[in-house]
Image (tube, rainbow, N blue to C red):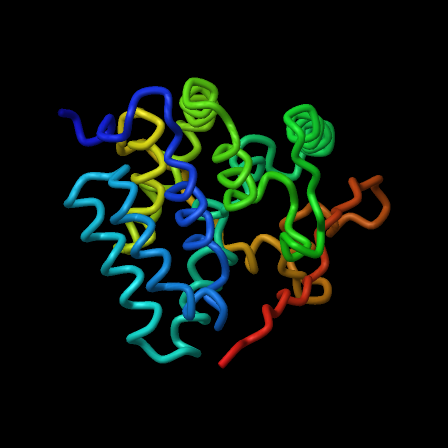
Length: 240
């Protein structure tokens, strides 16, 4: 029997999806304490094949075996400092465009129509398109709808999976597991050249690049050069 159809037809591997959602969350003390429970769920539901389960087990083990600060810093470096590995789905679709707001509203309506109301306190203030939140929602759907929903975001999941493979991260197993549970192909896709998030928000030096911007001619009308100011990196609370 196929590795992605081991679970009974018509039955959603609810707890496996929730375990994967939790595994993608910030590795605080609570997550590390729950590692044995997550392992038990993934083994018990048998929603992923043995090879994928070994990869997930290696990731779970690394969260408790490595230095706490190193684990947390590695997570921030991996998911918060580059668009290719962003866990916010609309980052990959809309970027910073004005379409992102309406898309977020539509997603919230989708949640509400299915009976899921987001509590900002319980999701750590994360946006509705944050992948762990999306996976929690998917886990509440009937099997067919669950597969359809994962199918709709499969191209994004494969893009993030490819970026994680490129970085040789064990987190790639989480994305692959979601795709396999949704009976979607795990594929390597072409990725655009990535710009570091800090670089894209950097403020140029005073008067830098004036000649290159055509500003060497003060008597001529010049276009305004608008750049984003440097934003302080959001610091997640480090937990011992």
